Image: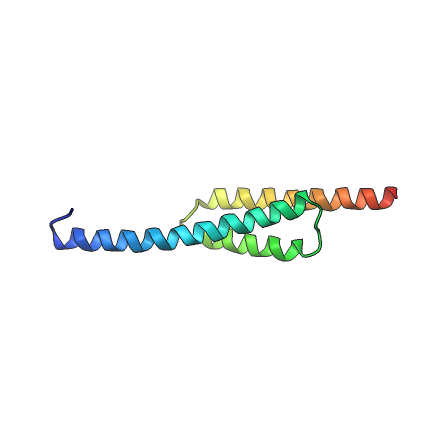
Length: 97
């Protein structure tokens, strides 16, 4: 346990930030998972809104240094690619029918 007043305050601040970051990280991961699930299962209606929401969460996480800027960019790129692949697959199966 810290003895100095500034160290005690730092512990309080770190705990508040840890809790806030934990919820933000959870929201971000949930949004990414929703996009991935929709793309894998071919549920393309509403996937644009999910993708936009996930991009927003990733951008905000990068802005606040919750994740690195490059990592957020990589996740956005992969999600966008997955959605495009799912669309192509759906279009291919629709034209084949």
